[in-house]
Image (cartoon, rainbow, N blue to C red):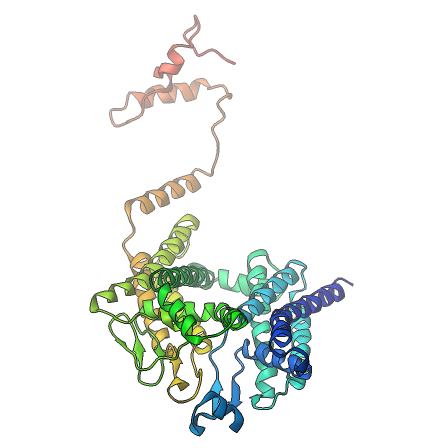
Length: 466
């Protein structure tokens, strides 16, 4: 009964996650259809448009084919009639990942994480199948296979990650516990897996926060350029609202671009362009308001920002090392080297996946190449994080660490036995203490000469009993 209940709750979680994502798209599109088209609106196209955008938000590329009437109305050439959109508005993808991870954690706490992850993924996949089969609009195409697989993989990754992390921490009485015991049996190499994941999470959080902060500073410094581009677009209040909502959907994508700029490789906004701390080479940039945040000039001195990923790796290395010292594990150089390399490789993998979702095509012609290069971005993040984590994890052990280790060793040797202050001191022990006090090599004074006992002696010269 419990496993059935877990499966049902996981399926409900998946349905809610999909419904929220679709509703967030359907609500503003309904208002757009109402205010922009009025009674002449083609309401039959509302749901297909919602479904296509939902798939696009889960990294499914869209193919756009403009009709001849549209080409004449927009005033562009026939060579730009067909193009692809593949730069993902990552807010929908991240929401699905977070919702799936929460569902996986709840399933792990219930003791049946396997059935929970499977049930949730099947339910989300069924919804993705329904969306893919009912989302057809003339001029906009999406691969049905990718429209089903990519949302399902996204949900599976989040649910499985959340469940495994929770089961690793709290135990599941099954395969995760057996793997955990096998890893613990590796001795000094036992903490490598857990500390690598923990260090990667620290690096990811720091770089995401710094990227968001740099984007906010760009808004403060170059906000006037964004306003100018809004004014140049000559759109009404409804158009401004739609553009603003689109910018909000692309905020996580813009954060990835900012982190790539901080790491050094930068990003492109068209074929043959580059925006990096060392140099900025831009041609004609589309009049999208968010592009007003792109810095127009760069300098070699700006390369100092590459120290930020190095600092993120150093913070991760410091926190991991502090935990290792506290737990007295992985004290050797090789295990700590493995942890540093693991943090760098896993951080590079996260950067590559983020760059894949945040890069691609945004339009015809030069806009076929936009965003950070996944390979160079991953290489830069991996190398810089490795330097920072390696410095902290592989530096010589300081005096405090060695003193703490000696203290722990002495405590273990003494057997953690507390001294019973109320136990009477026998004569042989007292005589032994007096004899030891006479030894010139002994650095400790006899307990009878303590100032505390001098003030509490009775007439017999012995300490008063309590």
